[in-house]
Length: 317
Image (cartoon, rainbow, N blue to C red; front, top):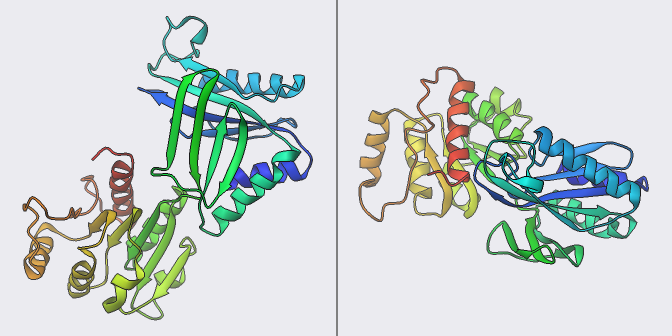
């Protein structure tokens, strides 16, 4: 969000910017698909397209384009191998990426304002960049967060679902819930937290959650949204409430459903609700939750959970 607000603020100051977007990425490239950077004519920067000498060179190119009044779009392929000739990025990490550079000016203010508004209001539209220029399609939809097509330098298109955000629903607002809220907020997730306890210190002190709700767990299935961008973590105060919440949510469609507890506790809960994890059509539950790093403190446990969620989000599981 801060990235688009940076651009909005600069345009309101009548500044000119060059938008850099990674529209293709292969192998071990440091700049991944969808990475963005804004280079302003007052030398301010926001975002990243991968860092290192490669980023330095592409920023210098963006500044030169601004100075010469060349709006683009320009497509720049960068190969991270020493034998890549003119396309060598200056890095040796293998892989490659393709970056598009396009100027953002006064005429783009309406589109940028719409993007900021849509993100603020949890709405989605489609950002489109192509040889035709930069545009935003309100209420537009895509089958996936990013769609890209490249035939050659004269025929390419990049589309992104602007306003699309991953959402984590943390059920249980104790110490681990507080620590996990902070981590996931820093990772760019919309954070929602639920609990059934009034006057809970860790609930009241949770300034990281975008939304906090005191609820009855019997209604949890009506409050947690389904979707491929929704991650759910169950960590309530008692085994009974964990079991009740799991029973309510197990049939719903989430990107991730995790349950905190020991192997013994988890096995007992599964038995009580009739869940058989070895069945071929059984929904996936991540439990015991988190990657095994021998976590002790609430923050260490939160780190292990966040790491597992990132692994799922990035398609590594």
